[in-house]
Image (cartoon, rainbow, N blue to C red):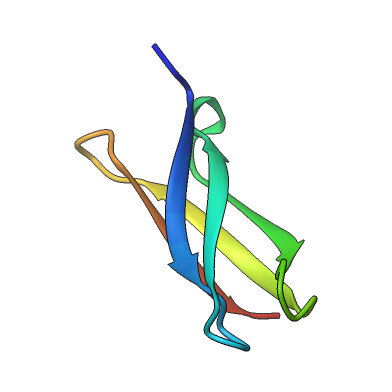
Length: 61
């Protein structure tokens, strides 16, 4: 079972399309990562849903 999954998201600052590598073995988590395009800090929230799938949301820090 592959625990690393790619998720495509848009930067909350510059709206650039980004691909994040999500570690699903860590469950739900929140961390800060810089946008790869505009270098602004964004808060990444990963939530594990009841069915075991993961959703990712980004917001300005």
